[in-house]
Length: 309
Ligand code: UDP
Ligand code: MG
Image (cartoon, rainbow, N blue to C red; front, top):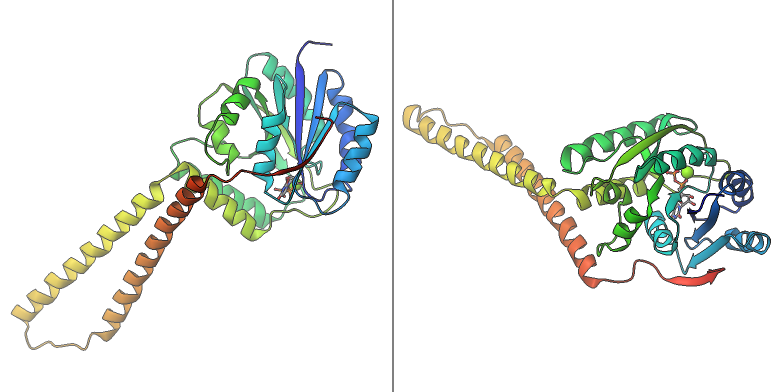
């Protein structure tokens, strides 16, 4: 046995059929080291927590914390990081989309000095064309908007060195987009590659609107460029309006007889400007909402129960 502790954190939300199959594949990989497996039950309403407790009776390296309700995947991960005591901390999904065997090569790269090892998917199975396309579009957009380069084709399956975990745990902000926060400081980074499978059992918890919300959270916590964009739109439409006025004045002077009932023009201008104004107010509102939430400073999650901790 080497003398480091490996923590594996697994957010679970209604994954009752995946717990046993996951552990059957995960434990052979991690038992080569000192390890702990931390399940974060994100308010599951099925037998997930019960099944984990049964496993804990058999294996004292497994731990569980349960939230009172569903606080979201990112908060569950964040709780895992706060509890993990490992020198290396791996986060993995419960649905076996992330193959546990990849952890071996992650550990090797970490031992050679990488502080972050991402598992990058070079192929994805069992996910809709729509999900793949929107995901790639999202990463293009966020990398265009954000000053922090955010790795693409990388999810929340990664290994973090203890120092990265410490940095995350010391952040004052709510971690609504951990992928970005992990990338932000520029720790030494390595990749391992894997094929992302389809879910072992159950359905994804990220439906269309949840994905859009996650994307907006990500963009807003890593960029204020949308606000700048709003300013540009303002300038643009004001500029166009100004040109229009000059045009009308010149027309009045040089061709006073060409009088047109320009209501369509006015209608379009009102719609266009109204639209831009609403979007702009919306963007500002989103940021104010974020500021408001941060000021309220409510807890990120509330723990109902801890087992074997
Ligand atoms: N998850 C969670 N809280 C949630 C939604 C999901 O803890 O509100 C967990 C879920 O149990 C799984 C992981 O986060 O282990 C990834 O979720 P999912 O497989 O639904 O997302 P996808 O892989 O489709 O992006
Ligand atoms: Mg999944």
